[in-house]
Image 1: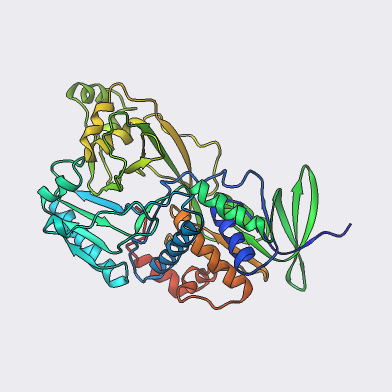
Image 2: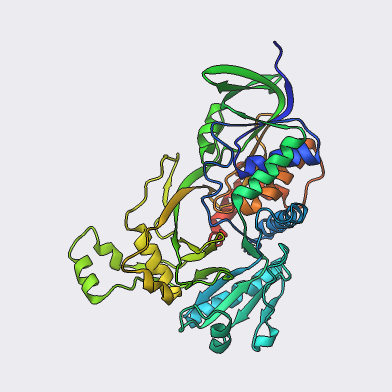
Length: 455
């Protein structure tokens, strides 16, 4: 029996693979076979803070341009489906109680303005501040609002540490349900020319140096699928999947874990943006707790000064608050499942968040039972994704999305579809080509970069 021909086979049904399949099937009317060993969106696509932002530094505006395009596509899809994936443009709120860091926030906002993020507004009167409109998935403003008046900060964000010196509210940012966005795109794609199959990718066959078929394994039986194009979008398994076709790219995986807690006292209001603390943190222990922790080499590390960046937001329709802090990232070549996390992580993360939002101290003792979940960021050295053709003609990649896969997937899927169909490419396309690692000049340049876009 002759195998059915597909224009494209997409390996990986996470957000990146689904977005690529959607663009190919809907916008370019290509027949697509989407394969994955597990259920769609079941590995890492919902393990992040499920947020989006157009807040990206340099050295150029390639990342910003990709994100702006992706956000525009998500807004378009949200309008089409009556916002079934709960896109909420509440912004990102960076906060500090350090005047030096406040100056840095201001400089970052000015640089972002030059790159095209939007206008920096210095708010000196509360009447100049425009609240978010949660009735629409489309942000009413871009750019950012910089506020140093403690009175205005306390009025607008009363839950923050009273010593907060400055906040920067970045506006074309927000949150969404990754699972629901992914399923919306998958359902639409399957209504057209996309099929999903639970299978394991095992390799490729070539003819005349080009891809002619993809081999897959299903229920222990290996089959050959005839196709002209293969897309690799396997998330954290990227390194291992590349090896199956004899290729390698400089990517690593980094373990990240998040927690969520029930906020029964409504310490964090439901309209709170994603809040990020930009200062180093000493965890708030009592003198008795400090003495006890110092007695053991296994716990004395809890008395150290922790890095900036703890962040969180309300999540879902109930009273849960999500908290995330990359204070201890483990990098490796290959992922290991199931994810194992430090048993102190929930307590550390809650206490870190409580420095920014002191009301959370009410949950220290006893601590509510946390929900803990985790996944992997797949990262390149300069923390930019890989989107475009690989060395073997007919093979393409859509991966290495680090912690920004949800927000960039729609734009990345569209960009990949342009590569596959030879459509016109946007100005930022070259920045994400895998072939950039063959350029010695580029390899020297990225050593000088000081901004990688990671929160």
